[in-house]
Length: 136
Image (cartoon, rainbow, N blue to C red; front, side):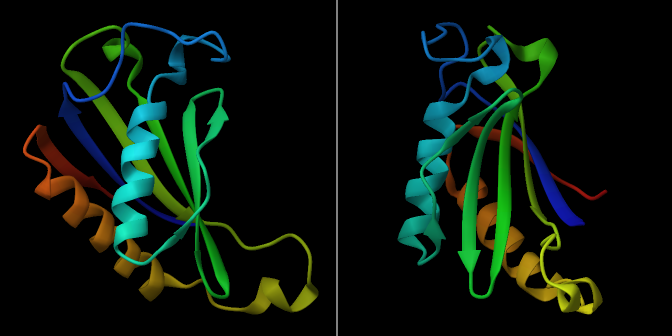
């Protein structure tokens, strides 16, 4: 797996009111996922609708022939706080099916381009503070 991440602080998204459909209190960020969906779709990426996970939300981004996973989660200590600290991670995992897939190089360049586009989206929003790239 290859990945690139970002952390940031913002008051733009809901952190205090939990929706009835949320799996747990960490599922804040549906509005953040929708914001990223819109920002990346505008930039020409094919993006899935937000998918709820136990840590937050996921978007699947397709850049043929690769599918990247964009994870969005609130930091544990920031649940219910305004502004809140968030973590975003973009990753690529080799598919489990297909013998040849295991021997192909991971799409590092495509991941770097995608991470750059995400970083531009994050840095252009004036209500995002302390946008920081995090490498594994």
